[in-house]
Length: 132
Image 1 (cartoon, rainbow, N blue to C red):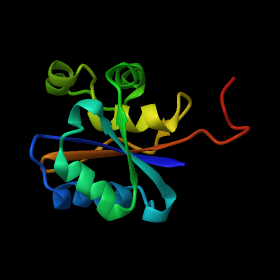
Image 2: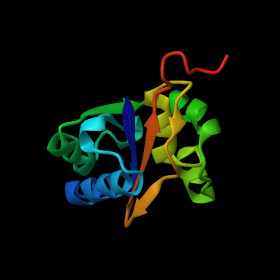
Image 3: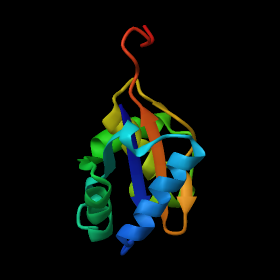
């Protein structure tokens, strides 16, 4: 399972979100059919652009509670002081993807930034490949 984590500034459009997700997919050679879910912080639940983008891409949108975001934030690759000040985690997109993909998941790479949207892809740990 691959999860697309999304972070954004307020008021983003579905087109901007879709473009960022597609950019991350292209950078990491991932196809849309390989992505199971889209994830974003619960605080972004009122962002119509994110909700519409998930719908347009045929992905279920998972709203990540702050406590899960913070727990996953310890495993991110990117660190933004601005995002820490605003959201309490170093990378919203990366933490969202990791939180939903599972506690042993890994990022496919660092977040992809396109304008006001960031997207990170996390892969669930494969059975039998989990660290002990």
